[in-house]
Amino acid sequence: MFRIGIGNDTHRLVAGRPLVLGGVHITADRGGEGHSDADALLHAISDAILGALCEGDLGLHFPDSDPQWKDSNSMQLLSRVVWLAHERGIRIVNVDSTIMLERPQLRPFMLSMRENIAEVLAVEISCVSVKAKTGEGLDAVGQGLAVSAQAVVLVTSG
Image (cartoon, rainbow, N blue to C red):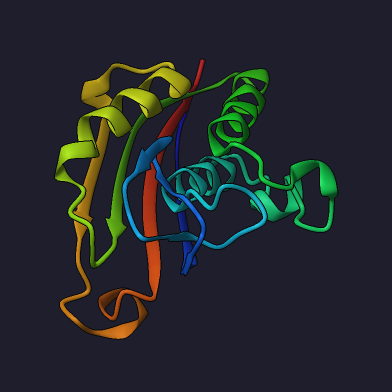
């Protein structure tokens, strides 16, 4: 049996916070505002997996009202979501994702992001797609005010 999940996440960009995407620290003058490390890419992938499992979203499993998740590393959150999938007899087949960020350019960081994600998902790197788009000067992303990510995952049982 195959199932598909979709996830998305958006974080406001603020001064004084690191920019973390796909578990990679990216040199930037502003980073994502959030209860955790605000890694929009890993949050979108986590939500996509949870969606495929019909298990709600990250906020249900790691609520921002719980102080234990304050400044959490999103790689660890994704690891917990993958563990839940494996406990249910589900394995990830592939993930396709897109990051929307006006600047900085992300191409130099893509391979590291893919490697990080593949390792946590226990898949080959060829099963992880990460793309980057700008907002072309439009909306919050295009004006440099936010980072957003979308992800789709295919999972299978057995």
